[in-house]
Image (cartoon, rainbow, N blue to C red; front, side):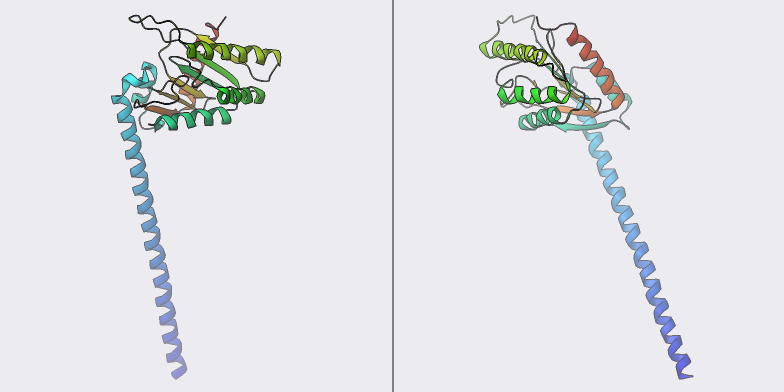
Amino acid sequence: EKLWHFKLIFYQIAESIFLFIICFAILNWLSEKEKKIKEKDKQIEEKQGIINKLLEDRERIDNRDIIEYIEKNQKTVDIKILSRIPQHIEFLYDTLQNAQESVCILSGTATSYVVDNEFKDTLMDCLKRGVNIYIGYGYSSSFNKQSKEGYNIKAEQDLKKLVEFSKQKNLKGEIFVAEYKNHSKMLICDDKYVVCGSYNWLSNARGYNAERSYVISDKKRVGEESEIIKKHIRNNLLK
């Protein structure tokens, strides 16, 4: 009888421990689930905040098609923000170093402050890897007709030399440089993302202006925008 009583107590204790483990596991699972839901809600809130800021910031984007696309696809579009000049520069070089097929760069102007030896070497590495580079610039104001400064002329000359050098060496990738009336500031990497905003990718190496750009990752939209830019650049190549 004592043995039976001992076994009963043992089974009761074992059952209690088992129930405790089950309850603890369920509570832990519910806690983790709640945490993930909160994190997801926070991500959605942050994303919506960025989209709202972008829509309020239309003048920086200077691209009606992209604005309309974001307005229609707010729930699905993947978007991030760049807010400082060093952040833009880092993102530009990261794009050039990791692109696999093509890079498009649009800027109001081009200067030797950006088109320096490091920039040219990075472009050369892209071309050796088989990445095609499309560069377009040439903002022109109807109110202020200014002649080119020395840093503009040097940047243009260096880009021309790079085009000629790439042809002579028969590199895997090609570089296309165009000058035409352009106010857009954009950076496109393959069909991965398009960056648009206020930052002049080829002229602003430093400064105190507040710059803000938006990184939009959408394969269809990026592909469409990329083809439009490539066509404009091919039709306005530097002579």
